[in-house]
Image 1 (cartoon, rainbow, N blue to C red):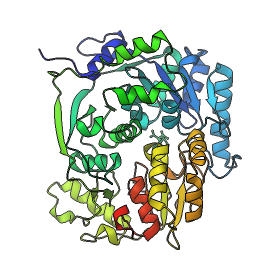
Image 2 (cartoon, rainbow, N blue to C red; image 1 turned 180 degrees about the vertical axis):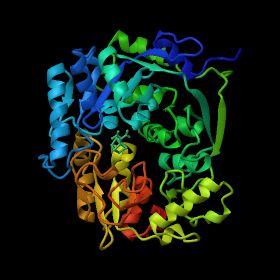
Image 3 (spheres, protein in one colour; image 1 turned 60 degrees about the vertical axis):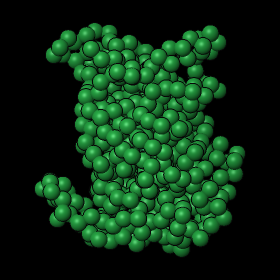
Image 4 (spheres, rainbow, N blue to C red; image 1 turned 30 degrees about the horizontal axis):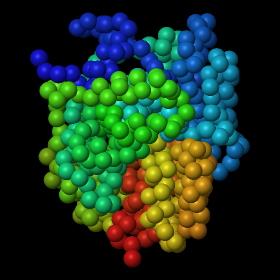
Length: 466
Ligand SMILES: CC(C)[C@H](C(=O)O)[C@@H](O)C(=O)O
Ligand code: SF4
């Protein structure tokens, strides 16, 4: 029998009740994150059943999806209702809530980690697909549906069947200007937007070890775009350093003990994975998407592929439909695609390192005439840090808008939307039809490519800037 995978190690520590061969296991949940968009019905269910929240102290709430980023005042009636309901529910149940206007407010997947709430070996759940982000710590982090949110609120447990494991081996080191976002867009293009369905991905290899925790969050965040259940990176010194000075991390002797335990959280050398995918990252270049799922991407130096050459009929039809929606045609050079809007932000690329990268590329350049650029910090803490470093001055001087924290233009649930059928280069994670606005056309890019694109007005890499 082979060794144990990281997934199995974390899983086994959390089984409250084994389902045996055929039924799901009941897992203990260490941290439950909630937001205004997916929690109202869950609380309503509890109220109907007259049950309290079992562990309000292990539950943390933020307002992120529905909040405007240009004002502390919420005007939209639906958003007001969502946010008002969350406030009432958290007040009634004694749950910590970072509201719009609070110093620590921000996107749930940015706030939880930066405050040190997420530790290696934990189970983390949230009624949000991008909960996979937290796997960057070596925590087992799942997005769950609203009925499961209710279950976790009531019991602090979740019934789940153990997913299969997939090792993603990044071989070699990426060259300068190739970012964690590019690694993932390349992986998605290789395995497809559903290529990891039913799996937990464990990211491995020298390139992962050399990636900051923030970069690892970008990588794990995008796991869900391959259809995966979760993403994982084994914890190491990078993880411990990230946590060392955060609030809410274990203290004193508990910290030393924690590190000793965390060091055991890696797949054994002889552990067997259900599947292994190898990606050589040494010859990668910046990646961008041309279509309407995150797997429809090519190198920035490439051209839009010819749908007729795709062997799989379903893929061919999807590509044709995507090109019609995007108003693009096969053979077009990606660099020739002109952009109206640039969005920097989201739980994929709205952390301080992302904003630093954007500022570095912008330098003292200006956004191209006619292009709208939005820079939206992932949290108010990120915003404060960016202002302390003077990054906001770079953005404002360039002609970009500098906003408050929230999901913003990542999806059209708040006032930040791409107008009409405009084309947007976006550092977010989904390019679905209508995602950023009714007819919006989205190209997923790294922060570096977003900044260079804002300057030239068409899809560009920093190396294209003179
Ligand atoms: C609103 C929420 C349920 C949704 C998700 O689960 O991911 C959102 O965050 C998204 O990114 O599409
Ligand atoms: S930033 Fe985007 S992807 Fe992340 S939680 Fe918000 S809406 Fe979802």
